[in-house]
Image (cartoon, one colour):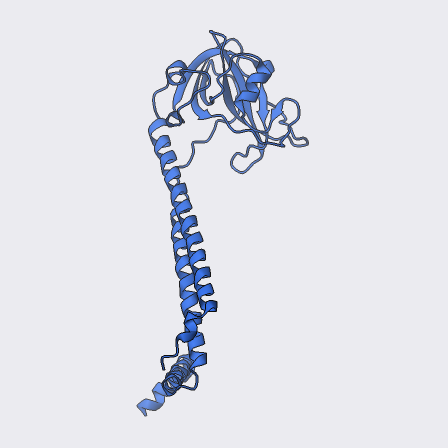
Length: 280
């Protein structure tokens, strides 16, 4: 009754190796989810600290045109200048509460000649064309803008856009188009502008303080790893029973399992009938 020698065969060592590799993969995926959760917590902390700050002058936060500290994301800044409306751009494929549309980027030229890109908000796609029906005009003359900082976006290879539109907020490309010294590490999501126009694009929505399902996913991957070893143990036990089917002790255990399973398989009605008969 101790015929476990089959478990030390090359075949079962192969199964064990597969279970170990599967478990390692699950652990790596679990750690990746833990890392994603940590990144989400950092972002939540940035929003909590920076979003409601008092606005600071742009030059005190962005000391150079091409540098940006990620800890300053969402920090409000004030900047004064005049809009370069002829260089205004629309960023394609930007959803807003589930609706398709565009974000409106309008360069703002400061008194020293440098340019800061302002995302003035969102407009919906047109009813009959892949272009807004209307885009609210930016204020003319000098304007003071309060905007929250965000890092520029990476280039999307292979993406194209019609004239006046761009697929991503790649600030270096925008600077080349404008041909003026431009802040290329960060741009601003407009919170307000003074003087305020009669109408403006819809303002950016405050990001939710939600870390997402990363913790539950991380735990699930650990459980999957344990399931792998559990499945291996189950298969090993089943083969042991098959190999030792003629062993008296194993035959006795098999009969006990059969009786137990038959009792478990009885319907509720059969159980109730048995209880009634026992009371007679």
